[in-house]
Structure formats: C-alpha cells, structure tokens
Length: 524
Image 1: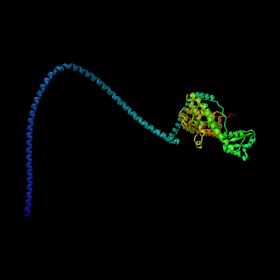
Image 2: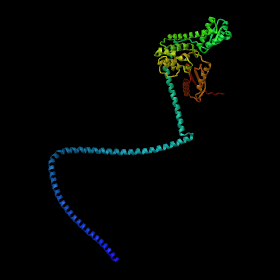
Image 3: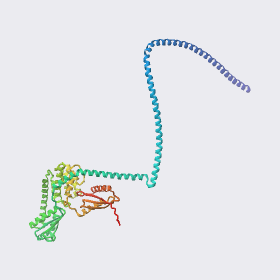
C-alpha cells in the first residue's frame, strides 16, 4: 500500500516534470517561428524602403542636376567677369605665400639658433652652479681652516670686523665734524670776535672785589672801650642786634666787622658810625639805632634799584623786581659785586643784541635780571638753582616769555627757545671771565684743576695731563705707541666735549694734545 502511494507520488511528480519540459519545448518552437516571421517581414519592409529611397534619390539627383545646370548657367557670366580679378588675387596670394614661406624659413632658422643658444645657456648655467657649489665648499673649508689657525669662530671674527668698521666710521665722523667745525670757525669767528671785542671795549667798567670783612675806622683807641662797654654789654648787644661778628684787636684806630651777609655788615657799619658820632652807646640805644639803620638800608635798596633801572633805560619793571635789583648791591658772586656784574651784563647784552639785530631793550632787561635768583628771600628758595628761581620770579611778576627763558637758560638749566637766551649766556661768561673780575675760593679752584686732569686721564693712551693758565688750558701728553696722529686729534675733540658736558666754568678751556716720538742712538 505504501509502495503504491509512493509510486503514485513519483509518477505524478514525473508527469509534472515531463509536462513542464514539453511546455518549454513548445514555447521555444513558437518563439522561433515568431522570430522567423518577424525577420521575413522586416526584410520585406527594408526592400520596399530601399526601392522607394532609390527612386526618391534618383528624383532628387535629377532635380539637383537641373538646379546645378541652371545655377551654373546663371553664374557663368559672373564667373567669367571675375576671372581676371581672381587671377590677380591668385597672383598676389602666391606672392604673399612665397613671402610667408621665406619668413617661415627665416623664423625656423632663428628658432633653431635660439634653441641652440638656450641649450648653451643651460649648459653654462649648470656649469656655473657646479662651480658655485665648488666655491662654497672651498670657502667653507677655508673658513674652517682660518678658525682653526686663528682660534676664532666666524661670529667672533665678524664681531671684530664690525668693531673695526665701527671705529673707522667713528674716526671718519670725527674728522668730518672737525672739518665742519673748522669751516664754521673760518666763516663765523671773525664776525663773532668783532662783535664781542667791540662790545667789551665799549662797556669797560672797573671792578672791586668784595670780601666778607669790613674795617670801621675810629678816631682813637678810647672809642674801642666805649664800644665794648662794661663787661662787654655794648658789643654783645650790637652783635645780637646786627648778626655781625665784631672783632676788636690791637689794630690801631680800626674795628673789624665780619659777616657773610653784606646787608648785615653794612647795617652794623652804619650803626657804629651813628653811635660813635652821637656818643651815646648803650644797649637800648644800640637796638634803636640798628632798627633805624635797617629801615634806612631797605629804603636805600629801593633807591639803588630805581637808579639802576633808570640808568639802563628799563621801564615798567615790577616794584618787587626793582627791590631785588637793589638788594644785589649787597651780594657778591665769586668775589664780584652782583649789581655791578648785572649792570655790566645788561650793557653787554644791549650792545650785542643791537649788533645782531635783536631787541636791545629786552636784552638789557634780561641781562639785568639774569642773577636775581641769587638774592633769595626765604630758606626754601635756596634749594632751587638761581637761574630757575629767577625765571620763576620773572614769570610771577609779568615779564615776557623771552626774558624768562633767557634767565632760566643762561646756565643751561632749561632749553633755549629764543635768540636772546644765548646772548645772555655769552655776556654773562664775558663779564665773569675777565681777568680780575672774579675770585674763587682756593679749595674750589684746586678741585676744578683736579677735575680737569681727571677727565683727561679717563681716556685711553693718556700719559700725563696738566691744567695750566688758571684752568683755562689743559695740556695732555699721550703715549705715541698707543695713539696715532689721527687719534690725537679725535682725542682732543672728545676731551673738550667731555669737559663741556661734565663741568661748569667761566670762559673757555683750551685742550692741547701732544704726541711725540723720539729715536735716540749713540755713536761711539
């Protein structure tokens, strides 16, 4: 039973497979028939289309021939008319073609030459590159050999070269500056000397050097006892009232008054004169006379200021400035009376300003007021440089900007902004630099000479240095092995600039550099 079912299933399965195969074979046969039919119909259509195309082609060819013949007949006349022109055009074209061909041949030759030259240049460039590489290699090897020989690296050698070039450039610059300075001196020295000498000759004044001691003359030595008083009461009262040291010694018919303040010393002298003349000498009388004398001196200071201003032709000066001008009578600078110095500077400034085409009235005004800072009223003002203090006072009391700048800049405390300022500075130096005009303290004088010599010794190659002519000239002896002639000239300029920058002095300082070479042999 089972076998029967199994066989039945197998038979059904085989039948299905056979049927499927038969169906596929039939389908394939039908498809091949359809393809054959389609090919036959397509070939028939193509044949028909070819026959129609041939007929149409023949018709179109015939039409084209007819049209061509018609167009040809129409254009024959035109073409025959243009044949001549065409021939000429062809001739010109042939000529141009021949010309172009010649140009082309020439260009081809030039191109070939250019290519040859380019190739030659490329070969030369390659050769140069090889040579440059060889030169660089040789330079590097030489630098290495030099470094080994000199024990210096390339950077160190470069630094030495730069330093040498810097020194050479400095020397050239110094020579240039020196040449220009000499040229300026040749053109300006004569006029400057003429103006200065003319000014000094026209303004010649006598100067008396002030000191800190006054001598009061008396008729007899009996007056000394009256001035001293019982147990010294009178002289102590007089010293306390005036602030002056009174020295009574064995000097016949003379009493010495010692004080740094000239005003106090003058008050003491006048008070003593009044007391001796009156004959009543006692402490109460002394105090009264001293007070009156102080008021008298203050009034005299104002009168001196007014007279000075009037004599110089200066107008519109503030009363306080007039009082300061009067107080300068009782002040001194380096032993030179300050009022006389200021009057002289004012006159010098007026003459020099007139010679230079400047305003002489403003110059006189600035010259008179340039040292008012040397008569301070308070101790706080003593800490300020006198030039700056004088400028501040001038600004306070309404003086012009040019005058204020000239006062403040005459010792280079501030920058000069007008042509009047250097005139004041020069005239101040002229007044103070004259022989006998000023007197310095011995210690400061010696110190200035030492400073001059120390500046000279601060430069390399200096063997000896001597400050001579009261500090107006500096002689410098250098070592010939270390300093050349060119270096000696440069050294003189550098020392003068150093002195000008670091020191303050009246007048000018001449710097002389001496270089000497000696060769000594003995014949026996």
